[in-house]
Length: 328
Image (cartoon, rainbow, N blue to C red; front, side):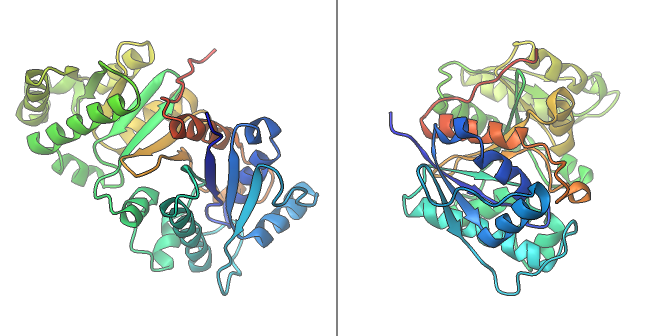
């Protein structure tokens, strides 16, 4: 099996992205499994290496590591805070990684975190990585899958207000998304996946006493999928379903909104959670955390999520479902 080529974007240069990228490229066991193309401003990496780690950027364009230098005009930016300059640079790194993918030069993309305020300040029309990648690749509805210790989580909605996320729930949308989730799990090698749908309201609405979404939208969608022969459970109260999945009851859970799934994954293992974007021409993996501007450029950033994301990028690029290690 050939060694995959992975593009690693540097993220927002004012945040922890440069630090965790530097922490990754010195891991020889990581580089032994891939050809890694670091996409970003090499001068920023050199500065971070010197100022944060007191060392020179030792390895450049040799062996299984190379750099795709992307420099933005007017690239001066304040450290530890979002700005138009850092947002413009972060978007440019993603754009270049997508160009490499479309040219067939890389097999997967792995991303360090970007900042939504910085993107807006830069005039970027996209709210996050997922919408940005979808636009570059011409994919209207990419899927987000979180992978952490013993748990996989899909998200029916991502960056919406809670009110908008609730309003977005419907039989048609939930049914279509569940079909997508089953298809994604099969594409990743699960022949007969078992999916669980999280409920929205306490106690799954308690037969309408605490809300009607389960009766009006979620249960009808589940019944449609069962009628199509799929193995699906739910809607299951959200205070139970993620624990059950982590214990092995389901192959994945569909969360209904951003925080419902993020809280479950990050409470279980904050630094061990990674995000996969599915439905693109090539897989994209990412850390589960943000730019952490409050600790940026201080040598405090934990690179574990990025290391796991790179490892999963190799597995997905080779057509394997990333491992789902259980906590010790």
